[in-house]
Length: 220
Image (tube, rainbow, N blue to C red; front, side, top):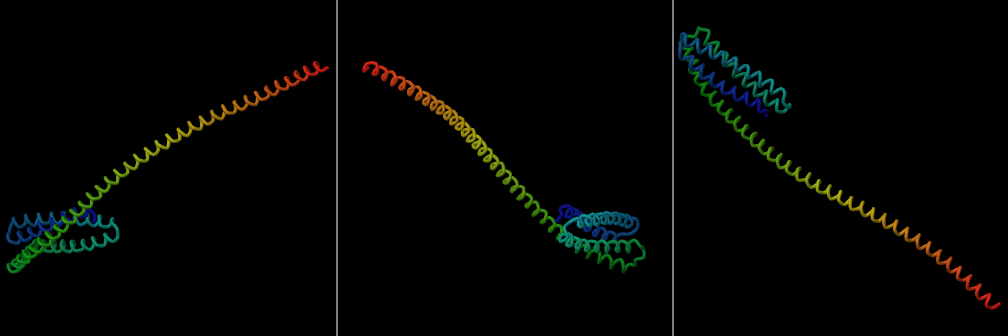
């Protein structure tokens, strides 16, 4: 349920109970005191109408399943408010006889007691729901903090793994460089060996020719 709606509802329930008590008190007095109390009640009724409108606007902006429940509750509040308005009109008409006034007084006291009990029950229910909502918010906040801490830990692990991968990449790059250098050295050594082989072969060929010439001239 919307916390905004619950706030308006709590204000309306307190105001409705107060207006019921004022109606009962107005029936017990007369003259200027009665007019003053009726004036106060009418001002309270305007405030109650304003709260009803605010609750109606807030309820219509909620999800359909929640809206249906709140609008049904609003119809009860509107009915209670209309009963109060009717009672105030009867008090302000000035045509009440003693029997009617006593009847209204008794009915007003009964309605006031009933309304007070109903309002207390509604307020207790609303307060309980607000407490439950507060507990849910605290649980959600705690879960969010735990999730945030877990996310930070995961990010730190990922950063460490990234650093390890970069270090491994740099190590492999260094190994590749060393392998390239070794390959160039081996290639140079192979070329030198081949060159030396050709030199040795050339020297051997020259020696064979010289020995052959020496033997030729000695045997001649």
